[in-house]
Image (tube, rainbow over all chains, first blue to last red; front, top):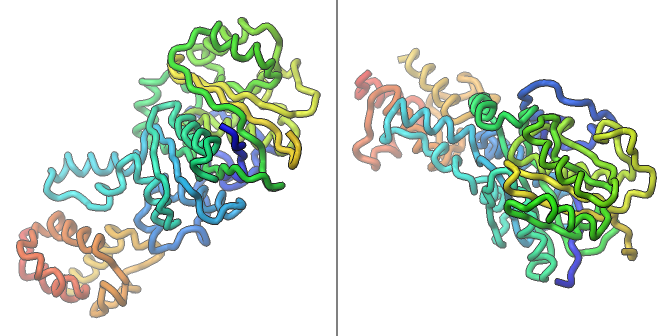
Length: 336
Length: 85
């Protein structure tokens, strides 16, 4: 693998100001158990005649994709790769309710067509008229990392020059109720839509470089600590959320480290859902670009990081079974 | 008939998510497909489901659809003659 993989542009829709980095200057912590995403203004991004058939998650996904693409050095992506834990939940719910109410013979075609997981990736491809590689990963809490790994490996191997990678999850009020029972470790349930343009091209508009993407199944804390100890990652962005059920595995890992890193968090700002690791990726990239860390992102303010921010390692787990490790590096043109 | 036409216009707006439109914006005799509202084949399927759910009408001959769905007036005429609820 010889090519390099850069993040050229990003856009997010979450509980924060949509399609904006405004949260970075005003990163107030979430308090509500369930917060819906702030809807983006899609005028100028989506043709109204096309928007009328789109559900919320589809509008958000198209809005972040088009915004990321407009802000990038890429005109047409070589690949569109999407991660989503639950796909188009709102449409799926409506379709199932209709099926209960009207039986199988009188169902709305739009809901049928737009309730599958890969609706998002295919709709973006149709709008962009992109006939390249198109794939969707639906692996619960590591859906985004799976999509990112696919794009990373293909760019590093030279199979593609760039990719539009996204992670999108909507949480309906009913699903939030279910998640509170099935996932009591989620402190603040939210929604996510993040799109990023990855490219092998070195250009001064790059935000950062992706140097490593790894997925692990059931790793021992000693194993993960061994990986971190080798590289001495001084800034760790963790998926901690203040809930013991969720945080204990991270604490067990930190105890095994041979050094004392500065630890950062993001779920107090962006909340929890199956695609929230994409917001960790977005937050880390923004920190590397801005070269500062907002105070609420520190897990322990007594360990504030004072040096130049060159690398951030993102660690997330889902059910303490699937773990992901992503390393991002500050981008310097003609430097490394 | 006027009440049925108004009801159909509101149902079409709701079913097809014609945001920012009101019943007054839809001309009763204007074509629904191509020109006029510019509806497409998926909208036609949605209208077929609308007739079945709301009026108990099952279109047995798809070829009739083109004439029935040509305007709100033609839909209202068909519904008034064939409705089962």
